[in-house]
Image 1 (cartoon, rainbow, N blue to C red):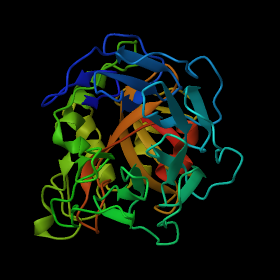
Image 2 (cartoon, helix red, strand yellow):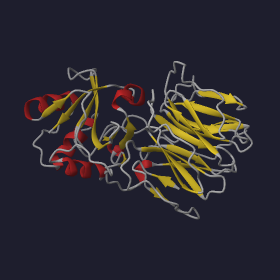
Image 3 (tube, rainbow, N blue to C red):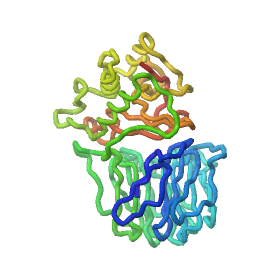
Length: 383
């Protein structure tokens, strides 16, 4: 089973489709999914803490109408399917049904945000994993090691536990799988020219294998069931960037080589290429700050507190002055009622210099960009 940000559910193999939230006007994007013990139902968890139940999954409550200090990033079900947990980026835990509360990191100052959780085999404990690979244990969950001090080249994206609770696996964005305790790694990806961006790891419940989810492996169109702010070129810009989501297509020609301009850092080249595809007369800039200057003269500039339109350029850093202050740019492809954004950026995937991607990023709240993306937003540029 796969769930998309708009609540669509896709069933493969012997998995059964029990319904979806694809036609609902969601306030926030779907970011998590959990199955019932008999695999005849599932829950979807939204960024704002909303929970949607299907099949034999019962609804036990949600945080959808409550204030969250940090957005929800994951969920897990109890072994008997009688409850579930939601976990937020600050490690706050929300327990429902027969899910017990065994502690959280909600009151701790974390080095990196929490990105996932896993439960013990008896449901009396759980692990949380942070983006730096740090592990936090609660209840009867044992500590078997972490990557918190390993200076990972790419952030952790999730974890799975051994069926007996004697270990766990941590997966990173570049497809590396790290085993701890009695958990066994069966392989992962390597940093090669076709390096791809991994967004999740899913175990097979027997400890004998796992799947790595590659978000670049699908054809995309970006829409929501709720109205989004747009400019006249929004649809054309979103379609252009959606057609380019892939691992670096031309790194074999040399480091930083790309289809959008010279062999150099190319996130701005990609963003201005995307605007060009919609008929916007912007030069093919190599420096992100030049996009700010062009928008100041020919388009619109919005502060980071504003709500951007689909197709806007998100400018990351602290200002447009130089490459140290204006460090990255991506294109907005979805805007949710709760303010969450989905973006697509060039020169943004995992791997060594020159082995990068046109990659999906998000959903994330702009106010959390510094922790989620490692850099704040200083402006939105609109054509």
